[in-house]
Image (cartoon, rainbow, N blue to C red):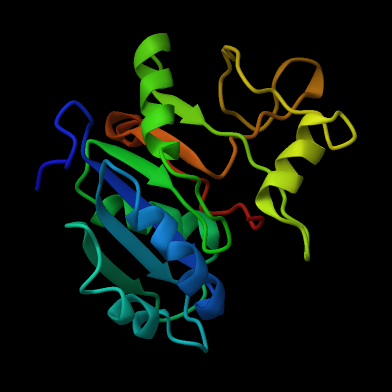
Length: 196
């Protein structure tokens, strides 16, 4: 299936989930609304609350994106779920989503345009926390004010994604990233990492 916007690539979204059916129900429309998403792979990490029920609710309203559901027989944690999702996906690019992160309109397209401009294989976007009772525009204003945690909005980072970098610095890739499929021929998520 070709991306609805011809100059954009075919993008598969991989979303690991564990016991967050309600959260997934809230954020899934923001992934479906992205222009270049042709497939959404939800990897259910043996939840007690079935994520498949949520996916079925959206089956008629996917803007042409294929919904794929994988369920682990036992808990494998996020890195293994992400690897399983990549293996099951078919897009030229893979966007690593999350079951509790809502995307703004055009988010994946913007990442792709940055990748193309910088000839990059990976692009990660800005993440803004929206606290209870806060509107998204208030959260952005707070993040932009300097009172929030410091962020890097734009710039080039050359790094080897290993456990330790120079001077003991550990490089971490933001969980929400657009990644060229060929990267996964060389690098996978660390199955033994126990974080998220």
